[in-house]
Length: 366
Image (cartoon, one colour):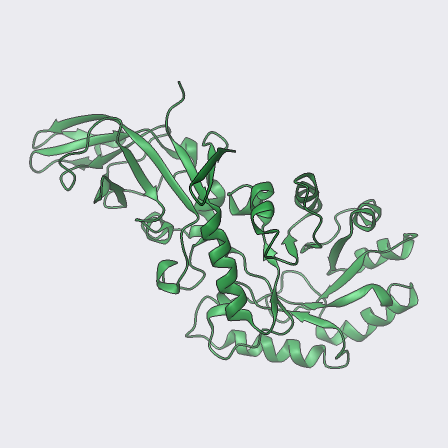
């Protein structure tokens, strides 16, 4: 019989978060970003769950877009990194994928193709990862016209570097650069806002926003948890207690004896570890939850198990399920204790952990 370590995925909460993104984006529309296997939630199931709400999806690369088609979803899909080889052009045309172009070699591939997909042009407004500088944008658009791709251009995209920090004005600066760069093409669509930008006051939404992490209930904003922003946890990561024992003062637990009891302590072992994607650096005092009680981790996280202090849950016993994050413990809290962000935790849950999909009381194994 398999262990009971699972990630429960609440598709109702997923739709709730998407609808919140739509309200915050209005009058713009929101393309749901479901890259990185739906941020660890399962790209096929996420696409199906959002198909009735989201008019368009966005992913990083071609294989993710093809997974959406394999799920039976025929919505428009934007490839945010565009094409990675010349052969991708024909596939994108055949499947109806929309591609972001950010470099000259991608223009060359479009030039060599018999047919061309819908194109978005990426503008580098200061993040300096991908995109054309505003100073060359007119040349890029002229090149697209010359190769016969001008009519396939849907619009322009950019990406914000610091929208998660409301104390900085970098997003305002990037917005101004973007607006000025694309002013000569007023009929083309524009997309700039990531999840964090949805929560910036007075931030222009343009025509399309791109909510990602917020769809899954984690916070895109520094100093805030998902619930504080009105988001609902989509993934609840839980595992069973497999042993409970009482430690005497002076006794330690786990590798390196990094935690030692200073008083008699009821301790439990939970069947999850960094081999499942739980962060190894989440040490003593990282919160968890069992039986209606908030508890804490103690000692080091091992590959397959971790230890918790059950002082605050005196009734907990072997077989009880411990929530590592979810509805009662925000993934953002765990991330803070582990020195990382919710994005990494959600996308890091390994294939060893089954995903169970729940919607309106119905469950199905994924």
